Image 1: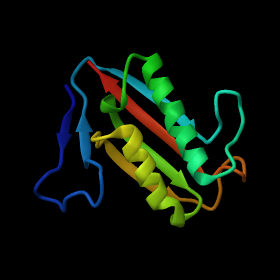
Image 2 (image 1 turned 180 degrees about the horizontal axis):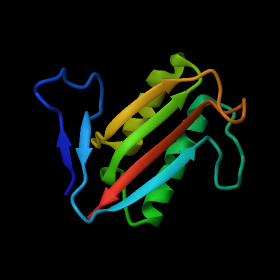
Image 3 (image 1 turned 45 degrees about the vertical axis):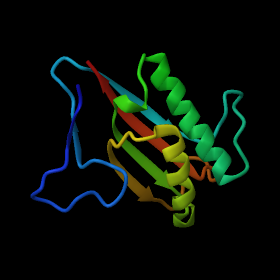
Length: 128
């Protein structure tokens, strides 16, 4: 069972995440490469919302392939190319991840591997 840690000795999380997540001894770890807004056919969505939906859907499929779900995610790193898209990302994240609150990092970047990419998300999951 994952142990979510928000020590009282530091400020509480500023959003829907946990400061640290501890995986139990012997847990299987799954590292998921950054997923972008490309669908199963390799088509890049035209809008930020479409790209974010595709990225989260891809993550969900990779987790499912390993017998896991968003509740098993212990860490996310999200890269956005435009801070203005943050509220849209948060809403789409909530749609997919529900009440899951893994440790998380958000980075606003000048660009991603393809200049058309507006979002990239990588995750680490663990399951006993």
